[in-house]
Length: 314
Ligand code: RRO
Image (cartoon, rainbow, N blue to C red; front, side):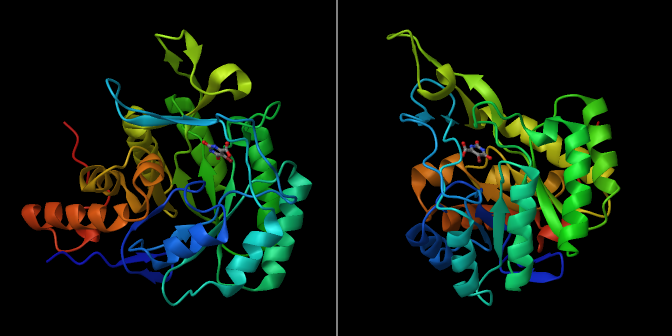
């Protein structure tokens, strides 16, 4: 029987599967459900300094039926505010599983203020800075502005002085993989990189009604699910190859043990489930773990380390 225990940074983790930030993690009852689920780790909804209502509804739609399975969202960073997630972080049972706290301040100053409080609170929570929210009207993604990304990483490194991670947007050009990785590699405290956030500013159209599926931003929103799996795998593998001293978390298109296996093969240490968790609920973790175990047994792998990053090329 496969052994799914994993080491993340210096922490033992029971298994490599967790939620994607934003899904099932906005309020305490959802966080408690994740804590009680089979997930090996969990992350809180990206938060801002003050609570936000987010964008008008409908702002999330599942894509299924005759289409590939996926989702489009333009939530607009609805969240309960940093203090709320910090309170959860202060009562979380870290013996059970690690907790990541995702920050997505509207300004660099807001990020630094939250980071100061997180540091002062001295919880074992792991900081992830979201550089890739695609859905706040008028705000571009920091991960697509390399100068701002460099400045932010310098400021967070000197303010936080502990290892942290970043959630990246998908990149689509080899030169961008090179440049983003080169910047990340300047900062040794960037211990992990989560690839990918949703593919931003996609447009899904309903043929019959000739309308967009979601209301905010004239229907433009972040794409998840089957549509993003190959892009996610490419980004995981691109950063795995370019950032040998960093740990990679894979996110995008995982709905069964098969995609979880592929992400680990591409170089991921942990893998996150977004759209499928939204649709199926926290029971999905046990299913994906059972499927991943069965694939490993069939292939003769006893641990994830035996195949992590061992993708073969032709
Ligand atoms: O809240 C959102 O609209 C959102 C965020 Br912060 C993000 O990082 N990724 C996404 O697809 N939606």
